[in-house]
Image (tube, helix red, strand yellow):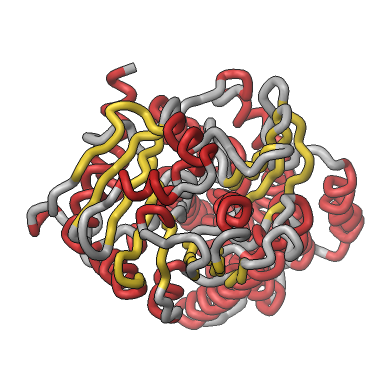
Length: 531
């Protein structure tokens, strides 16, 4: 009787190599998790819904991988499991950037022109599906590593408790390095795609660290990340709609930024998967035919006359559209000074280089880059005649800490007597849940609050005056440029204005109880049901 031969067992990896591999895996896993939303952002944005889907998928994949890895570690040779999990996770990380764009375009075609009111189910469901396809597989294999690594080290005679403590400690150290390194170095310097390539290369290197010496023949696999980076495929950029030309695109520490030309318009977008934009620049004119054209009414409502100082604070400067408009209208007949707040310094640098945000075109502008708007309201003393609030985070949201009663009270303290706060709010009319909540909360901090709908858009501009009523007739008399009134009149959508009373105490947006995310979901569902 011939006895079958069993496959000889490979020599177990050294404990030091296993611990180093665990650290590498922790680094790569956290790097992938942080870069995942950035990879999806050009197609689905970077809203709280996308973040929730990515984090949920990551946690579910890690949990499933840990369970399966722990089960297999007691049944199979842990050394082979360890090498296989690292290698497969690394290869999947290399593939993710190449698959992100076709999957994103499959779910949200550029030609479809997805509107905000139709976006909630598509963005939520689409980002969940792509997250499951791209990020769940590599994170599943990374989740399997910890129990397998513990079993591998314990097989050398080390106590289980010590083995587990060492593996989790090194993995956590790697995760910490991945957290800070990805945000501050990898994404801004190398870009999102190459961050995935580097993570994949690190995991392949880790698989070789725990492999037998004969596995050195597979060392050329480490050249795959470099080869992938050189091919230029799989970039994060989404396909453009008809008639658009991409002039430039890059990743900043905060977001994906692209500059697009559409006829005479240059459009600055950040994390845009929808029919929206961050800043506009129209050739040959400061006017935009968008909500920006209503914002020059604020200095007139503040009763700042010709020759008088006009002190302006713009929270959410972006590419400088508001500054450009104010320079064109007020720099020649008022003592204009503007302070611009923009949290993303990378966006500022991009706008300076490619969006005409230069000192010669914006001589009265002082930029505070890398500063949060709420911090600016606390640190800058003012007083200002006009504060423009046009800050958005994650594509759809006014940051809750900039739309609370406490934030509006801080803005009121920074305004001069008779000063005006002008806020751009995304919403579908005066009764929109987000618009109504912000209007009512503003009215709890300001004596007079009136909103103006913007024609052919989903924007509402809310004006709040520190003292006394809003004098619209006086604003018309103070307008020395007739085009200003013509443009503002065209931008306003009848019925022109809505006065908001103070919201009841329990309905006011507070730092401790904002509810803006829930209100946004309600707003989008209501708009979707109407269309």
